[in-house]
Length: 398
Image 1 (cartoon, rainbow, N blue to C red):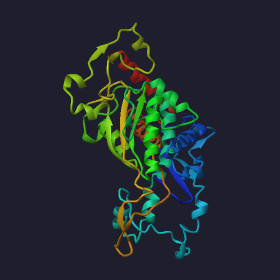
Image 2 (cartoon, rainbow, N blue to C red; image 1 turned 120 degrees about the vertical axis):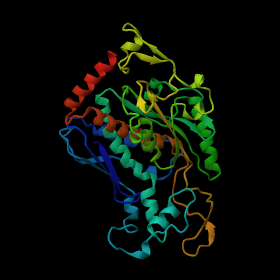
Image 3 (spheres, rainbow, N blue to C red; image 1 turned 90 degrees about the horizontal axis):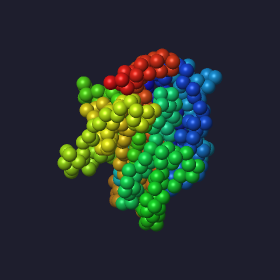
Image 4 (cartoon, one colour; image 1 turned 180 degrees about the vertical axis):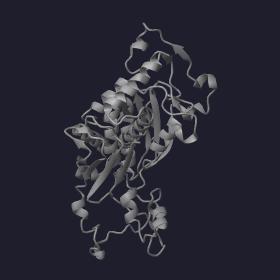
């Protein structure tokens, strides 16, 4: 089984990603991993921390001569800001007088709930691990999963569909999403320049008023075959697995597959995707990203029906709440005296929707790669490809 774990704190010495269960023989491109980390750092509305960090992954194990060897893969991403926190957050006892307490919990953050749970006198240690800085490790792990999926012709990318009240009012095409990921400059990760300009105005307004702003990102799995996931058991349904993967990200408060939200207020005839069949001589049948001749005019289901992928692009949306740290803080109470005050302020972002989309790509890639390995097995890439290609031949001939 493909598994991953992360370790590290926001202002600690480094972040760690551990991936196990990868078959041997998967080519590993360190530049691609670092490109993914770079993409996570981009976006209009990011804070000062991203000016300090230049995230790169240092692979310690599990990769030799440019390919996986079947052993656990461990990676370290250094925190450059650690130099400013070395005496504040030492591993050893250190000087307690240098501790930088979070004096009052921030509404919307894990501060208060975490302090109550772990019996901390302030929220410093809660903040350090609950921070979205942790998603850096997920992106590194997800890049490994993406490398595996790419060997099977499957890609996972994201784009932004809404920031505040500004929204992309049309569907994005796969070529547009792919082109967006190749850009060397990222504004808000939207495929439409006019919509992106309106989104940027929403961020500017939040910035001027000392506020923060959320939005919606969309993750697409392109080239996914039909038959991944199952309705047989509740915890094996693909939609549930993907929803949990995306919902686990910091600040995500809702997850949608396809047109899940608007489907609830629509008639069945407006929602369900009519089925047709493409003959051998049709362009749809020749598309290398398609593995079945059954086609749909629409993809309102988001590529998943009955907990199983149906051969269309899998579309997952994450709804991101505004960042909890505000430059004009909300009301709170002090930890020390339980007195009324304003919430603590920590250097933060105004908008992180594009970055959250990249982190969600990683989670979706990891979840989908795990399901593929569970279905097709293989201790080596060659064995996995043989099993996978045999299944693709089967569903193409159906």
